[in-house]
Length: 238
Image 1 (tube, rainbow, N blue to C red):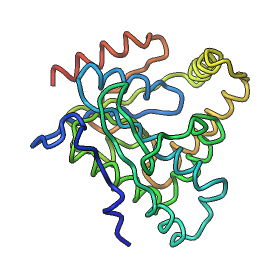
Image 2 (tube, rainbow, N blue to C red; image 1 turned 90 degrees about the horizontal axis):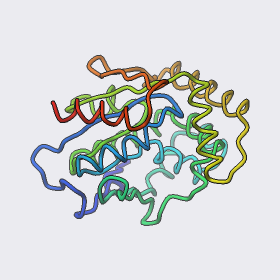
Image 3 (cartoon, rainbow, N blue to C red; image 1 turned 90 degrees about the vertical axis):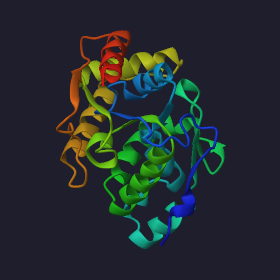
Image 4 (cartoon, one colour; image 1 turned 60 degrees about the horizontal axis):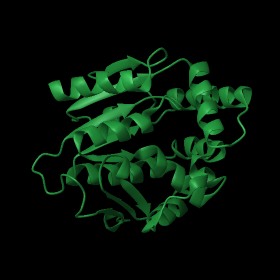
């Protein structure tokens, strides 16, 4: 089955048509702040931000609970109907699915758990890898995820692996939810983060780990601005 038609990037993307797009990868566990940092870093560099976690979450949300147990042929058929589109830069980068903004529900804990389950399915990872590689070949971008530096963009100009204590990540998630006016149960969120860590680090396909040439940054005791300054300095030095 051909998935070529599914991989679309807007001509408005920053860096489109460049001979050698700049790729920066940010990997790390759930709740470490990869998405926020990647968006800010992309803005400072004037390039696009690729939220790969959102791609998995969107697929999990659209396909629904239990999709990871479907037959490979059915999953391939459904994924072949997806069309991801990326354009813009920094915080203003837009990732669309079938021409529509991703639903807010994909940011919930349920969608996160489903995405972690779906991510271990071979056909799903193969599809997402192809989609992400295509986007990286056509535009400069900052990509965040679990295996950007190890599997998807092994030749990236600069790679980072962000980490933090699980309880600190849970506290950050609680603060984020509270700022959004949503209920935040620290114990439940901490348990969910540890469960996802175990799934992501111990899965047989593309387990969560730093690339051999990645710079590991422990963000437990660093502010968002401090992490950004450190990463930005290293990218510009490269």
